[in-house]
Length: 88
Image (cartoon, rainbow, N blue to C red; front, side, top):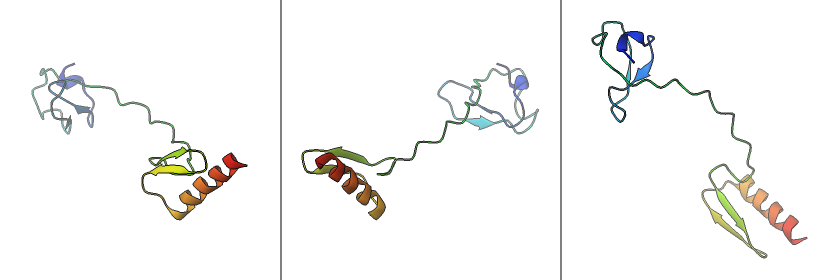
């Protein structure tokens, strides 16, 4: 794609792994220079609510739980509830 074809505000690169630039003006670079432009993706749907934390890992074992991450008091209570449900 040519630089002149980009809309103002578009993010582009001169090479596939090059630094990302933003087009601020029509005369910022030569209009016929080739650039790599990828259409912005649609925003992802919001992550589902996970009671134990989105980035925390919980592995329920027989009568115990293996935790990996940083948990709040509410998240630890959710782990305890899940552990009790599994026991009973």
